[in-house]
Length: 242
Ligand SMILES: [Zn+2]
Ligand SMILES: [Zn+2]
Image 1 (cartoon, helix red, strand yellow):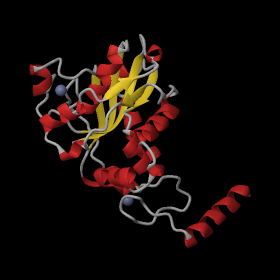
Image 2 (cartoon, protein in one colour; image 1 turned 135 degrees about the horizontal axis):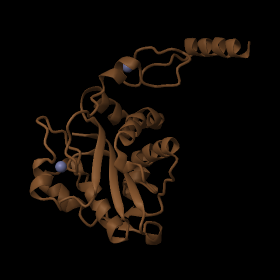
Image 3 (tube, rainbow, N blue to C red; image 1 turned 180 degrees about the horizontal axis):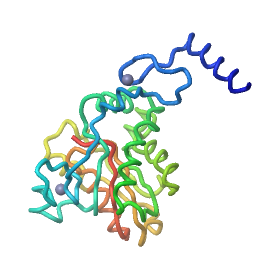
Image 4 (tube, rainbow, N blue to C red; image 1 turned 90 degrees about the horizontal axis):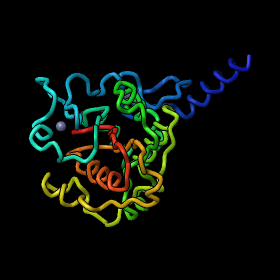
């Protein structure tokens, strides 16, 4: 009986405040807890098939490593990196809303794909601590939240591992990466992170959470300082890569 009343009330409220898909704007079921419709979800470009064993770059023709990881195996400081989606089409649209339009509530829907990716790769199983890639303080104040931290919180609920935002910090204000060339991105981001409370990461396996990986430069710079502080392993999960 109570359930029936609840459903009825939800329908009434949906009449006045319709629930629409955050991606395409189509009306959704009044009782749905999700914010993205099934059509949009099915259209997300999940990364499946062959990927570089180290950095996770999709490899159309198979093989073990991408060109970069094969030729410069020490270029990236992280041990492994994987991303849930390709940064294009409907998932790109949704991520932009998540990052720039105050749609913090999308974190749960977006983290879902990341959790799936974690479950499909055994090297993530022995994670001790989850650490989000930090924003610099100016950008955090402007935006009001760190989207990687929201994703990390959602992942933590699913995998039952703790999140810490007391370890990894930005030490200088860097130019936004998207304004720079690939070479400039590496230089811009290098040495811009610092570890505090280093004892917390000693001999620990870290899961680093990033939102969009373009060159993997940010993730690598974070992994570098975490390794220098004594972390045993740093694996990275990104929401999407382009
Ligand atoms: Zn939709
Ligand atoms: Zn690679």
